[in-house]
Amino acid sequence: MKVLIQLTLSGTIFVLLLLYSPTLLDWEPKAYSIPFPAFNGPLAENYKLSAAEELFKGVLHGPESIVFHKGDMYTGLEDGRIVKIQGDKITTMAQTGRQCIMPYEERLCGRPLGLRIGKDGLLYVIDAYYGIFTMNFTTGALTKILASSVQVEGQKLNFPDDLDLDDEGNIYFSDASTKWDLSTIYFLMTEYEGGGRIIRYNMNTGETEVLLRNLYFPNGVQLSKDKKSLLICEISNRRILRYNLKGPKKGKLEVFADVLPAEPDNIRPSPRGYWVGFTSARNSTNALFMDKLNAYPLIKFIWGRAHHAAGTFLTVLADLSTVPAFKEFAYRYKRGDYVLPLLRRHGIIIEFDENGKMLRSLHSPDGKISDLSQVTEHEGYLYLGSFINDYLGKLKL
Figure 1 (cartoon, rainbow, N blue to C red):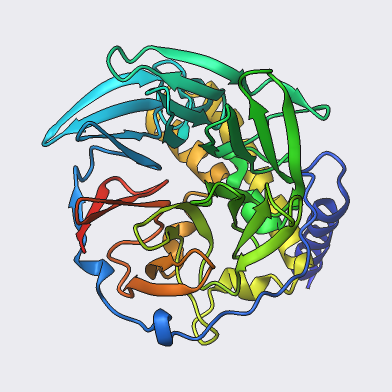
Figure 2 (cartoon, rainbow, N blue to C red):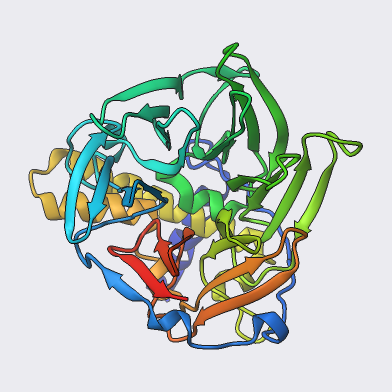
């Protein structure tokens, strides 16, 4: 009986500490519920995505975004490198940060995310830690054109994520959160935090302007084909927004597509409309454990604080350690890397027309390929980028 009382008292003190300690994680998960669509019509389940090839397995880690230039493919990797791919050859062209030891020196490495080619013939790169760069395709020389330390409405660029360019010298980009950054993306996705922004940067004048604020993890951005609006993937709300830049609806925000089966990442043009990469597909009958937990913010609050406290303790020990394997474990634990493999995976990509109507979806219900950040269509193939996969997907249309 004495042992039981001691355990009860210790457990109570531990829970109260997690609930009320001001020194622990600033963490305010909210209760919310977003419906899932049925897998029918354009969303009918299939195995077409499972047929994708895995290029450079174990060599390309986190090829988030993909562009083609003069027949060569370029992508950014989790260790901060931008590489050129010519057939079977991979050439490092540049690094946004400096050489480092992954993953626990991630901030030093840099993390190139969205890539675009400007009309000036340069590669435009947005890095989650360092800001926006241009890269010369011939020399690989990088030029920083907007540092993440720049204050926009009194706040630095906390999580620069994706970008697109118009013909008038403007860069439109997402700042995914003013609270969380890339290293704490796990908490951004599970808290349901609405501090994301869409910013316009004019390269001619150097002026920045916040077009949209209070978004829930805005990620991929894409100018519409008529350049009159900007499409924005809002991850946490599982929808795509349209912000009107010109015309009679100028300044108006609309929903382009919602009630999506997974979190949308990057959005890129297709000959018929737009391709979007997604995390893991669900419908009303196969929601993930994390989806069900969204209705219970108190449980998430305790769990999140406990996870972060344990992760912080491990990383403090790791800083004192000389064992690389332990350092990696501690960092990955705190970052939440070990949660994802516990969740069921169902890969999906979706093609939309210019009005937001679903044209088709390609599935991988067996999870052979999932967590896709970008779909780039090129010469009859789909090239499939991912923030976390250790390969580049390729699928014949």
